[in-house]
Length: 226
Image (tube, rainbow, N blue to C red; front, side, top):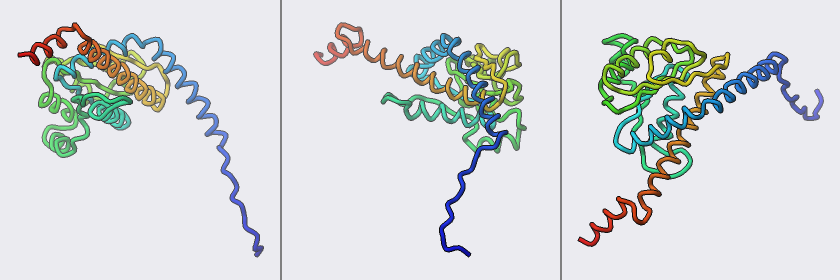
């Protein structure tokens, strides 16, 4: 046996892997182009959400599997922070409370796993964001119906339209990418875009209220003089 060291051979991507990556890149481009064309909706959602959350309302987010991971990613950005410092905001990923989730599924069935939590945590003026790549997840549809019954605003993030969830919710952003993985990755871009818009809106509102001559500034000055 030779005493010379053997340098490991670098692994080469398989042709099928390269083919998948090319297709995935094209699929992501389709989704991102659609997102850019739909940015007015994302901007409206982000500004609306900023106003609601600063006023004391909550964001509830529901999704299964990869969509559940996206839901928890978004709520972490809101309760914590995105890029810049700001106040913590009330946001709950409904799949994450495992004791409640398992109790609900055990006692009421899988279709109620999000809806019962919506009834417990949600109030009129809150927002339920529903994530589903297919737009047909039964438990998410039940949650959206329950939210609407309770006066909670419903938004959907889905894959290709038409689909039942997009039709059911008050507003929807659909992604025309063909693969589930591309849709999920575009949904993450949507989540980050929402955070960017929301943060900018909160920062702008804070700057306006600190400006000399604003109503809140005058109130603070009057209080200091009293």
